[in-house]
Image: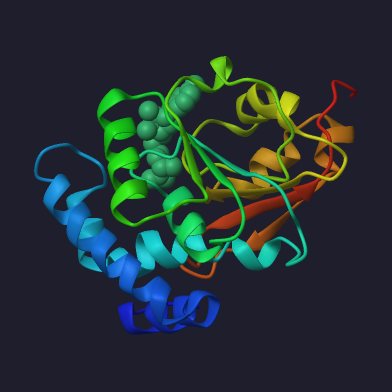
Length: 210
Ligand SMILES: C[S@@+](CC[C@H](N)C(=O)[O-])C[C@H]1O[C@@H](n2cnc3c(N)ncnc32)[C@H](O)[C@@H]1O
């Protein structure tokens, strides 16, 4: 379990090296500043930004096979979690951040620019309006209940799509309530940043079968 800011930094350095640490330090400073203007994250979580946002986002990466190529879609990126962290840690893979709120879109675009994230595409619109194309990976933190999330994003999935969905305490319950065939695609992994949270992990195309 990652419980301290120092442990979170060490974990992230193992995934992305010192270059990633420097970009995340810049992101942390900008986030503190911008959070005075708009409510991007809870004020309390800024005290533990490396655990609560950076490592919480980065921990999704080991659940996707390293050789996976193609776009990683992050739905409802908000302040950029997990999307911006993934783009920093996977600089050679495209990351698509989907966010509908104007001020958050502006923030995400500014950060992608300031941090020189050339692999990062911001889709500043509602997910429902994003052009259909194939996603290699789909993530979404605090976006929507699982049935709605899968319903809105199924058109981006293929038989090869990986799903990594941080779901807090409700993870197992939400999977158990899915239609049987869909539910069999997913299992729950323990979050490394919160002993009570789970990550819904799976692979495949979401259909409409029971
Ligand atoms: C609770 S916030 C979570 C933000 C971020 N993923 C996090 O965990 O910190 C949910 C975000 O999803 C965005 N959102 C909600 N519905 C959306 C939709 N249909 N299309 C795109 N973005 C949406 C909201 O604007 C908001 O920024």
